[in-house]
Length: 152
Image 1 (tube, rainbow, N blue to C red):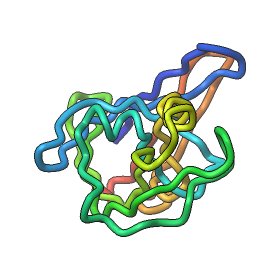
Image 2: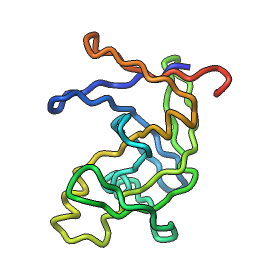
Image 3: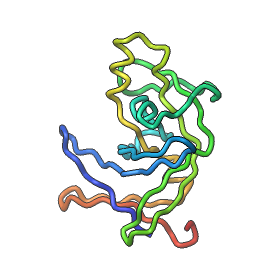
């Protein structure tokens, strides 16, 4: 099964993004997530959490997110986050993954506004858990994820 990715150039360098469909109860909508092979974990941004109305009230605190933005960002641990990706042949594949959700609720207005600018990220945990292979050809503007038949 092949999942096409988009290569976008808002600013250099290019970013590889995946279009995900969130299916968490009462939180249905699209997420455009940057594929970041430098990130060990998948993170739902504060902006996407707000748009999807993801409730973090009953979630456990998680390790603060660091490495981008202004210092560290508080986060919550969300078990079995459900999302779908559409394959090249039009099939929808469900994925369940533990993710971190950036939590900007307790931040000052300045830091909260900065947190809302950060994107959602698909990390290495997603690729490893589902046995996905990443193919990138920047010269020909092509990127996709391939899933082996035994992982479907």
